[in-house]
Length: 205
View 1: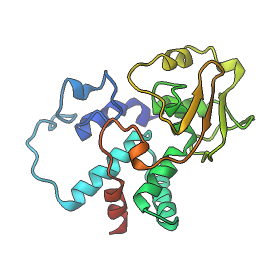
View 2 (view 1 turned 90 degrees about the horizontal axis):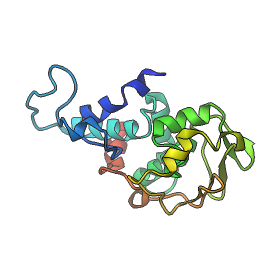
View 3 (view 1 turned 180 degrees about the horizontal axis):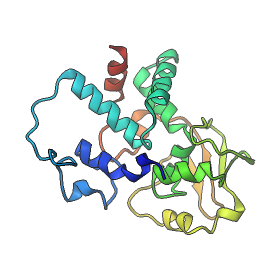
View 4 (view 1 turned 30 degrees about the vertical axis):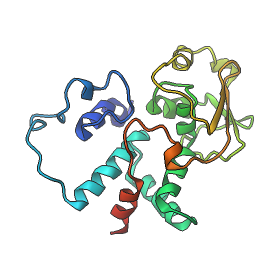
């Protein structure tokens, strides 16, 4: 297990927000950050600090994506036509692990990455084991038949803490999901406010 997986709840505590809306988040019990200096009074953040925090929050939400990969998403977002912040969200939501998470095939985005990497997922009938694979509208994502009775899958489908968004048509009886369209920022059911415009500003400095 990677250090990012082991430290997933530290992301919540460091940011002071329950970014996935999970009931077991330590923020529900302790709103201060981790470590011996976590309770120190914090001053008003600078513009740079505000932008950095927005970037860390968005990166963390999608499973603590590496800085190199996240920069590539930024570069692609500003290359595309339209609002760069909206483009960035669209690219992140098109990640295969994000679609698996949104479809409630597994409980967390960290589990979704591992689930894809272990070869449990097909896209349009072909096995795909790359979590960052970019799904396109109309693509049909499915859990391999031999993996559909795994406890992690059955438990995730019954989670009451979140719903499947309307840009994904999920059928849990068949363990399939169709990615119908690329969402805008307001379509994405984030548990906390995300500010992709600040992320764009951070990288545009």
